[in-house]
Amino acid sequence: MIAVEICASTIRDVAVAMEAGADRVELCSVWSVGGITPNVVVVEAAAAMGMPVRALIRPREGSFVHSSSERSWAVEEAKVMLDCGAERVVVGALNASGTLDEAYLDAMVEAVGAEHLVWHRALDASADGASDVVKLLDRHVHTVLSSGGALRAADGVDTLSAYIAQGMDVVAGGGVRPQDVPTLMAIGVEGVHASCRTSSSEEGSPLFDTAVHLVDYDKVCDLVETVQPNEE
View 1 (spheres, rainbow, N blue to C red):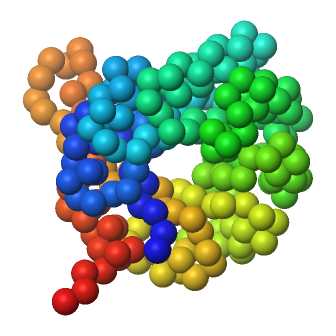
View 2 (view 1 turned 90 degrees about the horizontal axis):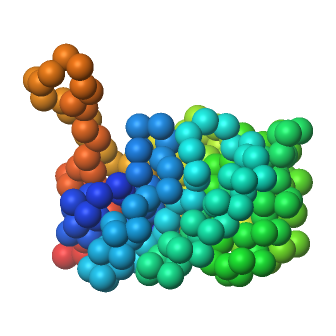
């Protein structure tokens, strides 16, 4: 059986994912820009609820190429998230040439230990994902969150299969829908990662964006049911 991981941003999202039967959450804030590092209180509260938490470490929106100060900031954020109850931190960065930032990776391994790291979809933006996977495995980082470089993980199965063959535990993320799960299970992914969100907005001041993007209970249930069908 594979794990169902839901991308959550609030305690309400965590509660919905938990009630619907998800196995864990990846916590981030500002989901609308692809996520940045979450609030420590949300991580603490989710862990206190008994929900396994992976915390995204991303100091800002935009590219995955970080300055030295951003790299240092990210390392400190990773240590704080683990101290607050996260089981793992989800990290990633690229260098100016568009491949894995080894200085960032080495700093993370030294600070929190390879066993606490998941390399995120910076891998999908890399100019040489296969080489990046070798560098990760050389540092004993064995888990990646990836779409296989495609817009949707279901379209990147050949690359994901290659990562698995190299020895990676792959969490398939990127447009994952219930109908994609059998294909992803067949190649041996460790888990599937999905947002399961419904976006809505209310009438309000024209000066402010009232859109919200909440985890949807029914969408999580549909995904969980595909992975773990009820036996009657």
